Image 1 (tube, rainbow, N blue to C red):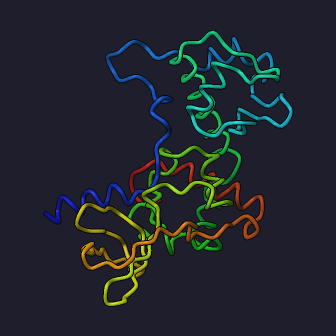
Image 2 (tube, rainbow, N blue to C red; image 1 turned 180 degrees about the vertical axis):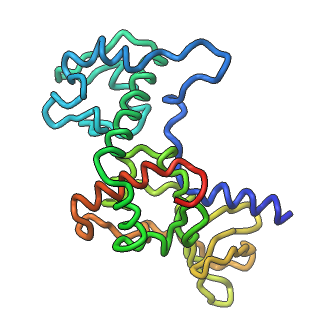
Length: 256
């Protein structure tokens, strides 16, 4: 029983959300995916430029959009435009719009990876940032915060940067911290891994897996704020760029 449960907890403990399914490539064996780069160059580059940086306050080539953050929102803007602006609707299919978004996201990730020095970013991660005291990469580090071994494959570069500077902006459900108070008054704080009708499973402050019966609980409170501190004023602009470059480079595999 615990073998299957621990496997489930390991999956949930990743704590990262992959880009929206709408912006994923079609499965093998289906029709060929639309060419997002070609669609962008033929329909969008006249206004946004080949590198995506010619519209004021917008740099789609680096993942900086004026009004959208999620892939479905971006697909909607590509299809419907933005009323009362120069951004027009496009006569794309949803698959074509999603292909444009995929292209822009990949372009932004490549730009983030090349903008900084990943080796210096790893040094920031392990040193000044002290990130390994909570996070784990390739089997090295702590387990209190999400495992980042595949973060570059699972999250967009702009989301990674935002999470570093504004951790409360988006807290993935599997990253939620809770406070449990038992009937005898004991308090248990930790990261929620799973819950069902009878139990609540969490990783406590000592990195121990705990399964607490609901019948033994007096209180279960979700903690609204992320336990991760903001690094907005703790890292220089160069250190932040290097750190993002390092995290974008984490695509899975062994220790980095």
